Length: 290
Ligand code: PAF
Image (tube, rainbow, N blue to C red):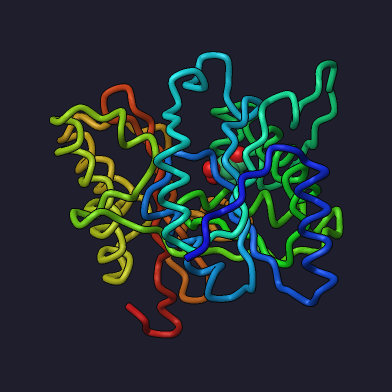
């Protein structure tokens, strides 16, 4: 496997990609904030399987963190990330510094309504504006055929899709399955914040989502399904920010189990002081996939 080339400059990155595009190569892009784990490498592997060349960005984006959030303490280990990406056939690593992406005096932001408003949008004001702004700028620097995101950040995927649609960006947005540890905990860079005892409790999040899926298939009322999940998490002292069954696209709350409605159970919660999100797609009973 070839050693990835590290590029720090937006224009250099853009020229390289455009040159390779003119040679007929299909480019896949995996944006990340580093601190890479098997969730990220699964995105890379899918991109490698579907494209000729893969570019991964490593950039901890300040504009998507609120003032009280963990921007400063967010884990950073460029060498470990580089070595991991080298094992996964990434051709280019785009690793700009903050001024490269946000030049001094920069004040331009992308604001998206609709999917960016509820849930994370309400609890983390400005978060999705920061995400959309950086994804747009990264796509300018790395104008790729396809960009890969994990389904764990379901709302983020909807926000990026909306931006791509509204701004007619010429890129395919690919959503890849959530990768989980053997005990079910969704992989996240923030899992490193968990103490030993918190890490033991955290798999309850997915266990509760799986229980909810079973209850959904048994036809229990939505309120009951949600309450049972909340009870299971409360028993492990996991604090819930939200836990709602919603329409997969509109994110509107679903009030009745209905065979044809595409539904997802979205959850954000805190284990100790670590905030984690997760979700489970609820099978369509119309297709009797329960
Ligand atoms: O999902 C992430 O890691 C970030 O939100 C992203 C898409 C890389 C933008 O900074």
